[in-house]
Amino acid sequence: MPIHLASRRQFIAQMGAAAILTQGKGYSAEVDGDLIAILNDTHVGGKHPENSPIPTHLRETVAYLVGLPKRPAAVVINGDLALNNGQPDDYTHFAKLIAPLREAGMPVHLSMGNHDDRDVFYEVLTTEKPTTAAVVSKHVGVVQTARANLFLLDSLKARMVAQGLLGEEQLAWLAKALDAHADKPALVFAHHNPRLGGDAKHFPGGLEDSEPLWELLVSRPQVKAYVHGHIHHRDFFKHRDIHILNTPATSYVSNPKESTTGWTMARLSATGGSFTTHTHLPEHAWNGSKVDLEWRA
Image (tube, rainbow, N blue to C red):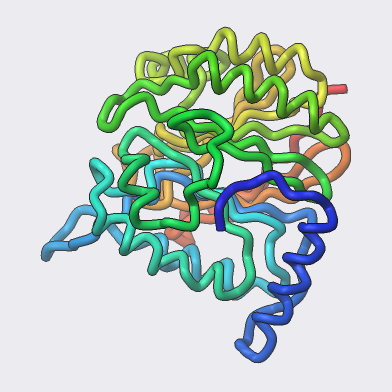
């Protein structure tokens, strides 16, 4: 479904409809309102030649999520959905892989990364294109959950350009959206890492307008964390009391000695969150590792 601003009444109606649709299919009709699944860097290719270096870990992750006793309140796939440069076959295959999530009634929210093509994405996943764009040429939205409001940004500067960029129009939209949804903790999602508060060796390929973004976030106390991918690793940082979560890639890693593939399950509370990493290698040290974060006052 497309990312959108939904009222509480709409949200409840959608959840009720989803429960009806999933009855009899072996899916849980119950929702765990405190649970959010975070994936990124799926890099799905439409055509997989023999000995392709890109594994199909997304299928395994989807199977895990569908098998949960209660459905997450949201599944966020945070950019680089496509294999390389956003071809139509990539998004066609991607849509097939995530179809079981939607069949199970899970709200799936997608963002753009530097290996995506926004126009092709809309051509294939037609229901993702909003009738009226909140920000011109950007795929953004707000997802309301019981414990937090999720703000999904579009950091795609240009296809196949490593650096990310939000732009003045998107920052202005974010400021208004945050002010309009100040009732709960805010978690901000974008594909690219900020050029601050993390590992400096990754800053050149990160978000070009990190400084104005951070000034905006710091000035709004409801903002508690910034969640990104792009690096294909896993780290937890903090900058000016806002947590920075670098979540693992679903598809592949550059250095298997340091990293592995996986996804994140976030359990939120009124004062913080527990972020558990699950990996496709059961014996990996990250698998089942939980980090508890406390939100700034």
